[in-house]
Image: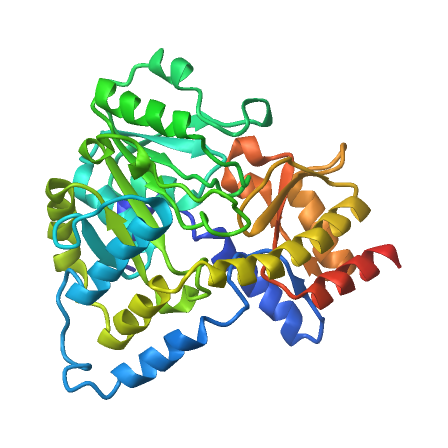
Length: 382
């Protein structure tokens, strides 16, 4: 029998990959599971995007290999999007690299910059993939704790007291998943200065900035950020295009060329019609987000009602497509989720999967209709 590679010894299958198998099995057995666990938008993409996708299918070059750096028009659309919505100027030729989803970008960045033994600052709680890909390349995860008392923001003064001599990369994610916390302009300025002082590449993972967020931000709004910063962004959440796998990484030409060395050896250019559709999405006006957020706000009010019925206490001032809430005293996040799944056929995400600082919390997704959230409330109250 062929043994697995050593790099997998400390990496587990992604929680949702394995847990959703169980949920599907329950559904196949006849149980009506209400899934409030994952952040997969259930709403359709903009209709203009579908039209553009279909129209591009008949382009004479649509089915050929595409440029590794994406089409010129798609990169230009990304630059226009950053200018229009963040007031950030990016060079479409040198400072933008399209990706097949920002999750792919996490792996590419990790492989491009980390050697075995390098250390990486990773938020706790945070997206589990940051730590997983760090382990895959033989680097070391160095977690920094976030908590409600600190508004789920990094304490850079405390971090500066630690031995950072081997740290090469720092992951940040604002608006933050899973807590919904937002970073202020000062936080971004401090992060850029922290990166410069300690020679650390700061990577802001930014897919949630337009969902229930009155003031979308990019870390590139900070002066001279490109020197030590990369930013990931995605169309998955903002435009309901998760299955399309379209994202981007932005930064200096030097850093993007480093990532390109990995990307060109791991994949090819994105399917042309996807890029054509994505360009149309990025050029939509702000009315698209207004309409989407009205739907999400109505759903959030229902989820907050569900959380109250379950005696869970939501955190304040949350943005994004989730509700992060503390579980009742006397239980764990895993036990609470299992109880809800087995007793009421409702699935939500346990906080422990995002790190030890998430243990006392659960995450409700807003990617379900008001009707289904209402059904969940009714089940709990029966």
